[in-house]
Structure formats: C-alpha cells, structure tokens
Image 1 (tube, rainbow, N blue to C red):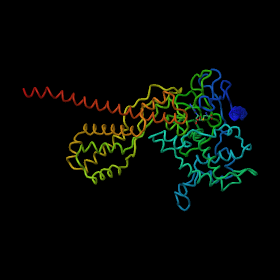
Image 2 (image 1 turned 30 degrees about the vertical axis):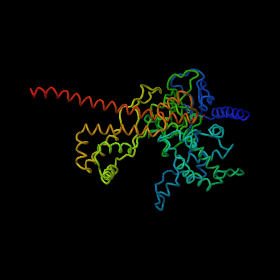
Image 3 (image 1 turned 90 degrees about the vertical axis):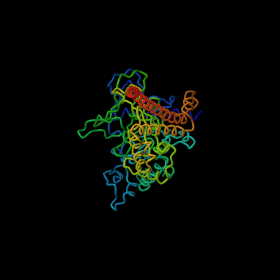
Image 4 (image 1 turned 180 degrees about the vertical axis):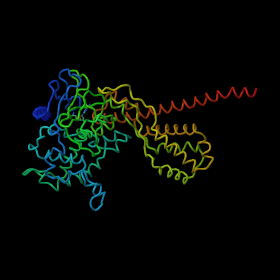
Length: 498
Ligand SMILES: C[S@@+](CC[C@H](N)C(=O)[O-])C[C@H]1O[C@@H](n2cnc3c(N)ncnc32)[C@H](O)[C@@H]1O
C-alpha cells in the first residue's frame, strides 16, 4: 500500500513539475481552459482535459521548436557530430553496403541516442522534468511474454513485433556508439551502466519514441505547412523525428478534436471544433488498424476497428484453386511445380494480401462519417488468381484446363469460390471463433493485455466474415444472372421448336 501511495505521489508531483517547467519555457503557451489530468483510472496515463468550454480554432498550447528534443537541439550533436550526418551514400568507402547499413544511423536511431544521452545527464539535461513523465513500462507487444503473445492467435501482428531486429539494431547502432564515446554519455563521476542496463534503456527510449515522437519535417519548400498527409507520421527513419513536450501528453483516437500545426518556429495544438468542459482533448495517430495501434502505441479503442485489416496468405488461395481447377482429375506434381514457378516468377507476385474495409477519412473537425464497409477484394488478388489460371492452362493437360477455365464467368466464379475457401481456412487458423471472442469481450472476462489481444483477433475474424459474406453475395448475383440468361433463352428456343 505504501509503495502504491509513493508511486501515486511521484506521478502527481511529476505532472506538477512538468507543467510548471513547460509554462516557464520562453515562447511556450498553455491555455487557461485546459489541464493535464491523471487518467490512470481509464488506463490512459496522463491526458489533457478541457476545464471550461473551448471555441473552435482556439490555440490550446504552443511549443517553440527549440524546446523539442531532437538531433538539432541536443548537445549530443556538438559532442559527436560525425554520427549526425544523414546525407551518406548507402555504401562506405570500400563499397561494403551491408556493413555500412548495419552501423550507420537514421533519424530513428539518432533520436534513441539523443534521448539516452539526455536521460544519462540527469539534472544537467534541460528536459529533465519532461523525461521524468515519460513512461518506464509499455504495453506494446514487444514487451509481452510468449503466453501473452499467444493470445493474438493467428494474427499477422505476431510476426511484426520485431524484438530480434530491435535487439540487433541496439547492439550495432546504439551500444557500439555509447561504448565508443563513454566519456560523452556518462557524466564525470556517474555510474557506467552495464550492457544489459543500456539494452533495457535503449528499448525503453525506442518504445517511447515509437509511441510519442513526431515527424518534424512537415513544411514544404516555401516554408508553408503542408496540407496533404499531415496526419501521417513517419516511422521509416527518413525524416527528422523529435519528442515534443506537451503535444505528446495528448491521447488520441480515430475521432478527435485537436490537431498539431507545424510552423517555422513552433508547433501549436489547435481545437478543431467546440470542446465542452470535461471533454478530453484528443489528437489523431492516423487510420491505424487495432493491431497496428497496439503494435505502435500499446492500446486499442473501438473506433479504430473500422480500419482493421487481415492478411490472407496466397498459399491458402493457391491450395483452393488447385483443388477446384482439377475437379478430381489428376495432375502430376512436376506440372504443379511449373505452375508455381510461373506464378511466383511474376514481378507482381504477392505472398499475401491485405483485406480491409472502405472508409472515408475523418472530416476537417475530426469527426467520422458513415460506417466503414467491406466492398471488395484487393484488385491484386484477382489479378494473381487470373495469372495462376493462365499458368495452369499453359502447363497442364487440355482436359483439365478446358472444363474449368472455359469462359470468363466460369474463371471468375472459380476464383471467388477459391478465395471463399481460403478465407474459411484462414478463419480456422485461429483456435477460438468470432463468437467465442465476442462472448469474452461482452462478459468482461478479459482484462489488460489479454483484452487487447482479443480485440485484435476478434477484429480480424470479423473482417474475414464480412469478406465471406461479400463473396457469397457476388456468387449469388452471378448465379441469378446466369439463371436469368437461361430463362430469357428458354422461350425463344421453345418458339423455334414450334
Ligand atoms: C503520446 S502518448 C499520450 C500521453 C500518455 N497518455 C502519457 O501518459 O504520457 C501515447 C500513449 O498514450 C496512451 N494513449 C493514447 N491514447 C489513448 C487512448 N485513447 N486510450 C488509452 N491510452 C491512450 C498509450 O499508452 C500511448 O502509447
């Protein structure tokens, strides 16, 4: 109990000193009608709440660019300038491209180094009160146990967690730099951390950057803020990333009421519509699926479900096509291998396809319109099915090809049925059903990480079902078109016989 109340007062003290520090930054503003609040009760850490009604276009707060933690503002750049030159070729002087890529920095790894450097400076860092309110633990799957990860079941998210890649990156690009410049990273008289401790700190900073950092290069060549793609944040390491105190205290959802504008000297948070007293001020992280929101930010919300996706491996479709195209006739293994080779040698060949719904973007006030709907398979999947059938025609014997691939409609029907079968197989890869997961969620039987995993897998299964229903409707339509055509033909034939 005592530990809890200590942690609680540290949390509240942290908020107070952070807000005091922020308000004292020259050029920073913080509107009187907002406050940083404790939202731990709803599992949302800190957030910003309106304490009184706010009009649209109100500037909620301003962060001068020189208060942002990034490569351009940290003293680390003047201490080891050689690692900050991002304008390098992909090969080193000896032309060793792989070696160069594994040791050279990008904006992502540089920000990890900057954050670790600032953290290790302790009180000497000008961002100390800000660093103190950053989380030390995360709910992103990177930190989940194998048992927790297994709750994601057959979700493609499991393969995207990327713990091993992160470990390799930290070893080659972070630890190597710190060990080569220990005198820079560890102030005189401070304790030099062991490798395991640095690894842990690097993971912590990497995860904080993943969930908190902003892409800072949003201005076009004329210095005006770009309108297009403003919501989208870069995580590829190509543009300058920075940690923006206060902007990153905003929580976010798929429906939101504030936006961060980027201008030459400052970033400003602006109200997009009227915000009532007591409402949370929410930012937007983009049209992310539940799985992607969890992977990057460690939380899920019902409103992001509209952007859910599910991966359909080509192998499942191929199995179904193979079975249907032969309809019991035997085809030799070498012939199938040849079909596979032809299909896979195509430049456009895809290993898997992403299914998603059609959804409008949020409007300019951050509101969402009509529900997202599943209204079709990816065009590329249809094209790949067609190419596969062409290859079958080329390679297998005429009897097989003639019947199954006779006309355009028959081929289309065969493709749809095959994708339908593949979707059913994909659904069976998850050990629990959609109904089981709905029950778990509605009964409130799952909490924490398990609850988030159930949300991810339930969303994927839901989408698989919607895709199956869509194909069912397409097939029904094709069949009734065919029946109508027969009916139209029938009286004419009769007439001819008379
Ligand atoms: C940029 S920070 C926002 C501030 C954060 N709540 C804090 O206490 O520092 C992003 C993190 O906040 C949390 N978060 C953001 N939006 C949320 C929401 N709508 N519900 C729950 N947690 C949210 C997630 O943990 C996410 O990784």
